[in-house]
Length: 173
Image 1 (cartoon, helix red, strand yellow):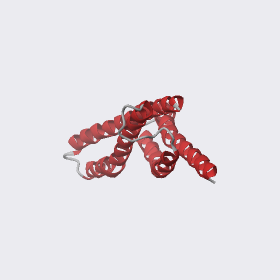
Image 2 (cartoon, helix red, strand yellow; image 1 turned 180 degrees about the vertical axis):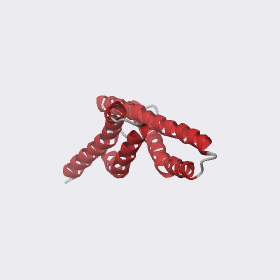
Image 3 (tube, rainbow, N blue to C red; image 1 turned 90 degrees about the horizontal axis):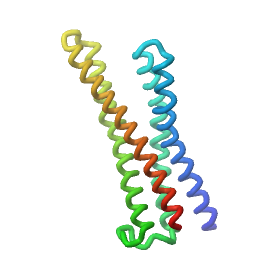
């Protein structure tokens, strides 16, 4: 029974990783450049990316939850774990760094979704309402959108590092 639980936990952990990090890869390296090259206006690109974000965000949120739950199960079966803060054990050190980076990725993800994107949406609607301050607000919206995109790119890089650290931890086993 333990083998089944552990195997299913690994399967869902890997599936959630593929969905979250793979989704970021697709958005940043495939969809966004394709949209910019193909669509005629920036507003069409923005509209497409908003729609993709609305579809991808719930998948990413579920993936994060699955990663946390399955990660807890997997750690309970891990033979190499002595003490989470035992940095004399190389496996523990790699896993600590990996989990720190994953936590950072989660913070960035939810900061964008719960704080930054609503702020961008609020400022965008104000831009449409007020013609007088439109250019100032539009510049601020553009700046925040670039910042948001840079955070997604940061998560992409962090995701690659997490995958590399996973490879290292698997090699230490």
